Image (tube, rainbow, N blue to C red):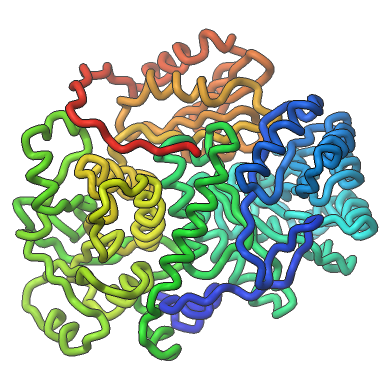
Length: 613
């Protein structure tokens, strides 16, 4: 376990909320960082050459509350049309800042910077062309590579300075360069170093109007990468206080996409990290905005709760023994048996429910499928303990046998910080039951999204830190929906895999097929393959890299043509789109991971659904 001094490198106080202090970066009329609110942004999906469609879609996003709009610019020809898109928006009375999204093409970045307020570059492919080469780089060879990057990047830095443009140095886990991969591996540390290489070049030219991002489809990887980034910036010095853009890339759609985003983004916002966010959903971009705004509001509400009454010294000491924020390891605990099931001690993370909710679903357990209630809270024997009460904590720790412990209902302090405190003061042998809220819901008309987002942020963040042996959803009053939410949080956090896992990117102008309808077809065909992970990628920008964690990949290779992958290795090319889903099924079957689907039991109770608007 790290020392207190080491742990606090990324966050001033892990038990008391404090927003990270940053310099201000200006993107047109919008200021990011400093005392400004967390900005919400999104990305249009229209072809960048289609001025009318791009302007219409951007106006719709702005009307929904989007503050910054991103547009892809695949080549210099695409980037040239940004002039007309910008002019069209201004003619419509809209001065929303535009961001050009650049991959592979420095000349496209140079053209885009003439017309838009911000340019996003990906350090993994701005100059490097990923070949998945395995080689050893000597220090001299590595230095030569950096000189090559500098020669290509300095013209863009100079142009952004001249025109007052902002920049995002946006690392993606799925597109690290071969140079970084060979020296640092496919790691969060490699993601950070990739971004710092470009930041050092910008700073050497006295250019500071930039911010960072560290996106990944795996919330654990994403959280760790951002924490390592902040720690690295702190080590560099006080003037490395650049704002942070948060996002979970390839999060997917529906509840899964919202939950993954809430875990990754919500965890970091809860620690005061993050100045602008994008929730990336495989849906029409306009649906991202209400989710992002609601997530920011949920975290603001949670972090404004009564802070834990602990001194900074006590906070640092407690945090040092709670968990390692830079390397996932599940908290050690001893196994206890509760209602015939093992809890803690390496057992799968269990799902609790209330007695009332158990009574409501007991007659239709078969229809609930995988979303089964496992333990009834009121008769479980789990102890509700105040972690601020030294006598109560001492009494639990003095018990001869391990005892499952949780926070008491009515607890007034922020959930994440409180469970961190509990984990630090509780002997590791005692398992912990996580609650999404200590204030059980009573309003049945409450929108489901308002329960989903804080639950995913609170429980998901703790699970990604290795804290928690069981979960209890109390913020959603509908029994079936609460169980579904509990299991989906466990899946998204990578804690308990009970269904097919999908990595699906959001649509953008690069996408070579309809992501929404294609993802729906793939889900329909493969949704019964428990534990199989399938990546659905519209193009190759992040495809091979993000598929490193997937079993199989479905990637747009050309208009109307699909490439199939096993892991990050392409195995079939240029498949007609109409045949590709069947060929994916055949590929899964050939690798011994196909099973025939079972008949679906009819639903007997309508479940709350997510409203898009």
